[in-house]
Length: 430
Image 1 (cartoon, rainbow, N blue to C red):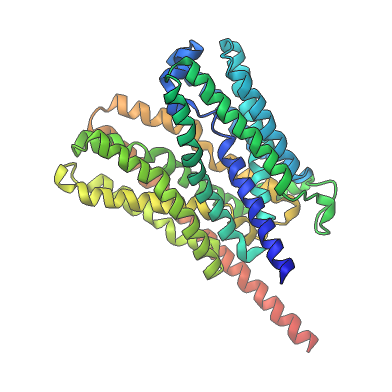
Image 2 (cartoon, one colour; image 1 turned 180 degrees about the vertical axis):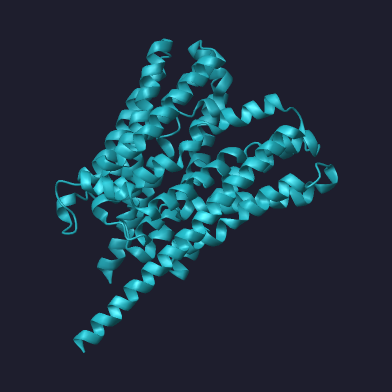
């Protein structure tokens, strides 16, 4: 009993270390989201140059997911995670010196390598290795909710330091240093608490890790393509979701303060609830894919509603209700879509490569959707631009929902086939 309790404590300490890692590692690359104007002033770069830096980071990240998955199958997740966090922290310290623009380009390339190639899939695989099949939903859901909570807690401390030190260039330096220190502390936590699982320690794995034939199997697996499309749809919802705020202020006469409050609820409140709720439901009903199936219909309904609800202040209540439903379903999907890898019977041997592959396909919208939506809003000013966004999202979410139907059907058939084989084996033994 005592050993089981100690094992549970170790598991959740490891999960806490993973949550801290997944939260802090992205803070410095995305620091422009919260400190945009001051960062530009401190570095002396233009809006266009900042956009180029973020595009470089996004491109390196996108192409790095798949090779990062192969790397996660060859090396210990603990070592890869700790290495990535340490590297990010050190590069963050260098960024706090506000180097020249060419060196900033090198920095953002390094950010892409550390986050996507050596960290992302290793982190996902570390979560999967913490529990067996009936815990995957809860573990991934807690990870999603945790990464929504932690930035609020340490973000308030960083913001306090920023404001009390003058909210200027020096304050920007201290904010970057603060996040860099947090990232290195996360590396220490990862090294201490995440189990040092090696391929050779599991008799289902080969010490050499993933092989080229395994990669071909991954690319040819229909269920992984379906899961990747579901993630593609979910990420599209996530990236377009923020545009509901200017839509509310422009056409529903919502004040800036109310819009900010709704933004906090949308980003943080629903993230805290959605991830853990979907994870617990998935473990309760014994299927992450079933949660994906039933939840994927919600964004279809909501974006259809956005298109047809008259843009009038009298309809603000129903619009906000659909907005909350969109956010809740979004974070429920994010909470379990990587947990579904286990249900697809992907061997641990190349689960990292599988996660890298679906991440590569699934996160493609981040490379184009902001430009696409921006062009629509410039080319079709007023409500016409938003109607383009809503129509596009209806199509994308329908494709995601159809993929969830096909994936659920395939997994159901796979489970039925396995049950028949088990019954046949029992009959043979009897």
